[in-house]
Length: 109
Image 1: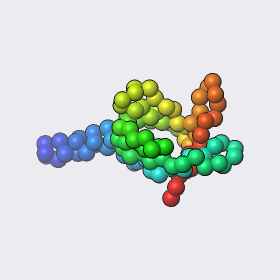
Image 2 (image 1 turned 90 degrees about the vertical axis):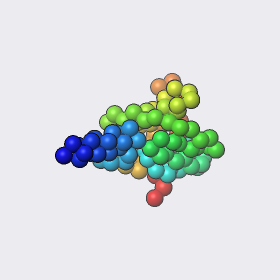
Image 3 (image 1 turned 45 degrees about the vertical axis):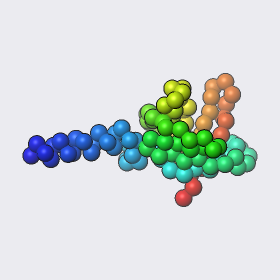
Image 4 (image 1 turned 180 degrees about the vertical axis):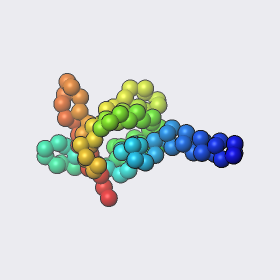
């Protein structure tokens, strides 16, 4: 019984720390097209895994903080986060208060 409890606890901790794409988990996990908002001009693609992101030829180990429709992506080497707002399951937007909408992400199936 103790073994089952420890095994279950370890699995739950791994999912929580890894940001797995479970219900209520990290909705950014996946492959995305990067576009200019309102124009649809393609800029490239990016990938998010539970502990890593890749965009514009730059690979980074990252941590995520998910709160509602907001996902904070924090590169481990910089410590400065990028906030992404999920508009729906397959659309997200990166924006800043000073500049406004920077890019939009569209999930690639």
